[in-house]
Amino acid sequence: MRKMLLLFVFILSMSCKSADGIQPDEKIGFEPKSLGEIVKHTYYTLAYSEDNEQAYWVYYVLTPELINGNQSRTDDFRADPLVSTGSASLGDYKGSGYDRGHLCPAADMKLNKTSMSESFFLSNMSPQVAEFNRGIWSTLEAQVREWALKYSKLYVVTGPIFKDNIGAIGENKVTVPGHYYKVLFDGNDKMIGLILPNAKSSSPLESFVVSVDSIENLTGIDFFPELDDQIENQLEGSKNVSF
Image (tube, helix red, strand yellow):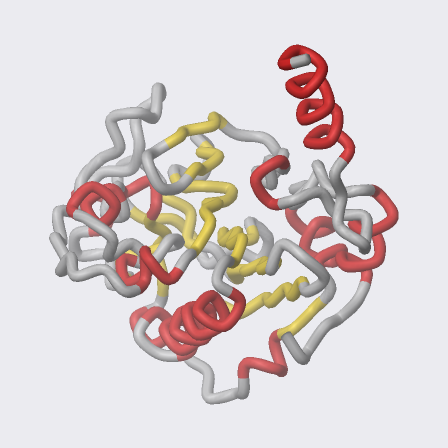
C-alpha cells in the first residue's frame, strides 16, 4: 500500500501543471542558454565571455528575502576565482572613467554576507557610463525590486549587448558595451524586456521596453528554454509595457 501511495505521489508531481500550461516554479530550470563559460555562484549564475571579459548574462531569482535582508555593502570588488580563463581585474577599470556597473545589483543581494560579497566579483561587472549607472540604470534596478516584492518572486536576466560597442578598457581589453538589457519573468504569465543605451538618459523606463524575442535576436541567448514552446512564444513575442 505504501509503495502504491508513493508511486501515486510521484506520478502526480510529474504531471502537475498550472492552468496556463506552465509547470510549477520549483520544477523548472529557467537558466538561459548561450555561448560562454557557465559559472555558478551561491545566489546567481552567469555565462562568461572571455572575448569581452564580462558576462553574456547574469541570472538569478529575486525574492523579498534577498531584497529585505540587513547585510550592508561589502564593496570588495575582486576577480572571480571561478572563471577558468581569469576574469577582468581591478586594474582594467582603474582610471578608465567608467563605473564598475553591477549586472546583479548589490541591493538585490542583501540576504547575507555571502550573497552581498559574491555580487562584487568582477565577472558581475561591466563598464558603464557613470551617469547611466547612477541614473536610469539605478532607476530600473529599483523598479525591478518593486516588482519582485509585488509578485513575491521574479526571474531576472541581465547583460550587455555586444553590438555598437563604445570601445575597450584595461590590459584585458574589457569591452564597453553600447547597450544593456534586462529580461524579467514572474513565473506565471508576465514577461518584460528592456534595452537601454549605455548613456545618460532622462527618458521614462517605458520607452525602453521591447519584446524578449528582439533581445534574443540581438544577443543569441535563449532566455527561458524550459518553458512550454507555445507559452514561450506568446510571452517572448509580445511587447509588454504594463508589467
